Picture 1 (spheres, rainbow, N blue to C red):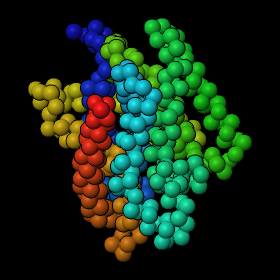
Picture 2: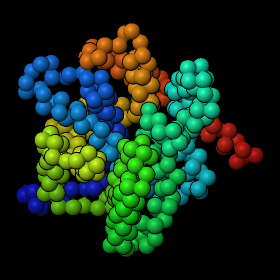
Picture 3: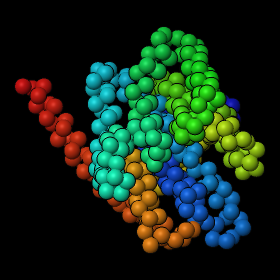
Picture 4: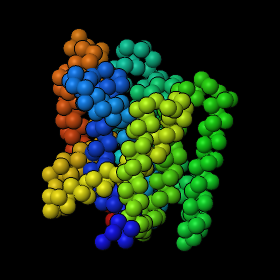
Amino acid sequence: MSLSNKRLSLNIVTKYREALYGFAILWIVFFHANAIDNVDYSFGVHILRHFRTIMNNGSVGVDIFLFLSGISLYFSFRKGPTLDQYIKSRMSRVFLPLLIIDGGYWLVRCFFIQKRPELFFTNITTLGLWETGDRMIWFVSLIVLLYFLYPYFYGFIYKYPNDMREVIIRGIVLMVLTYVIITSFSFSNNKLYENWAIAITRIPVFIFGCMMGKFVYDDKKIPGFFGLLLVVLTLIFFAVLHINLLHDTIRRYWFFAGGISGAYALALVFSGIDRLCGKRDSLIIRFFNWMGGFSLELYLSHIMLNRLYRATSFYREGNLYRYTAMAVIAIISAWLASKLVDVIKRKIDDKDREKEVA
């Protein structure tokens, strides 16, 4: 069968969602090693410097996260939760890991090091980015904002849910409006924009995920050659970044394309691995699924432990082995934290069910 006769299921990113989350968070960890701590994974071998280039642009992992999150929230909304149920579910997903993993860090930092206890509330509620420009956990600040905005995005995009053309038009209008507002803001308040740009320039890729939610949920098919096109677009994405063609502002928006094409290209790679292995969820997919199961916890523990690592005498800039040791500790800590979060959530759910029965 020719490529033109084959059909690509848009639902493939949901099939491999956990694996994509797992790959994306590891990519972010590698990116921080390179961008922040100057760790060189090329080992001085020239051909491996291309690998370092890929790691240098690992922040596209965030765009993959946001694109998939927009899709996933559509699936959640189709279950018909009340607004209270939706908010409670989303907030517990964020704030339980945040309190368990980062609560002690913020307590010591704000009360004893900075001597500004009021900042504890600001940071533990993820308002630090918006109020003080603290970008330590900027992604969490952004995702909390997007969770609150999603019901409004959903209401606008899916006002006429059975008219797919209307859905696409409304999704595009919302993205364009967002771009216009962000660009206008960059001219009107440059200081705040500098603090917030890393987050707010990612909102459009989340909106695109919101728009794609229905197409993915309905398992829409597209011509198979689009799969090849997505892989090529991903390669172009890295090539453009490698030769440094883009201004910093445009570069941030370029990650929009990388997040979408990268998610589908990776899903196709995972599908190919499964076919080669002759089974669903081969060993490598199971590994990424495992990592994806506690991706938020890993993000939080990695960021926090890396801050602590850089403040100790154990820190050596560019040292691959010490950074790797800290990354392994972060993974173990995150996995343990995720187990504790699961226990707490089960107890909360049990109490809620008891109240409903009573």
